[in-house]
Length: 261
Image 1 (cartoon, rainbow, N blue to C red):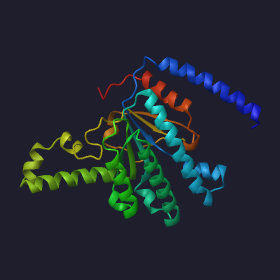
Image 2 (image 1 turned 135 degrees about the vertical axis):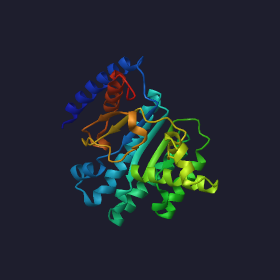
Image 3 (image 1 turned 60 degrees about the vertical axis):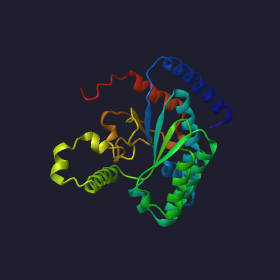
Image 4 (image 1 turned 30 degrees about the horizontal axis):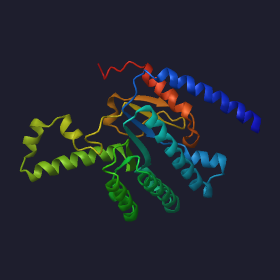
């Protein structure tokens, strides 16, 4: 694509984005946005050729997250959950996994140094290499006081694993109190389980976005997304644009949320 054509395209997108923002000024915005960050590897294969280019794809995805969080701030979003690494991803080749974890740790540390966001890792950190897990915990501790958007970084995350961990933690808690299984079964309700999820204390996601054209949750926030609105986008994550985000917000604002009623 020639420079002149790109300039015209960018100018058209800028005008369209301004119109979308204007229409959204009085619209209801989501408090919590979850994002399945998908398509970095496919972007690398297309743009670079895969193989050694995968790390460049992960880095391009990390750079997009910096932009995306700025868009969320502008929209008044309070919580953002980014799914960066699933438990299934941990089965990838060690060299590729090392590259991905290195990019993720660098990203989280960079976000922490900015002082703009409160970082919280979500997932089975015990499945990660010790140095990566420790780095994520250190950033979380260092940003715990930040009065900004809460950014949940889902690393080593799986929805089934989260529910298993929640039930396990619930059972251990009550076992230490001397509660029998029969007694626990008698009064157990959804709030008891919700109180042991990785996201306890946070609002459930109002809007879940997935890039790359896939239209499934793949286990993302299984419990929390029961009443979420979903928006699927064909763009690979590194190509996700502000205008795509504004379209997602427009779609969210246009829906009548019934919460299962």
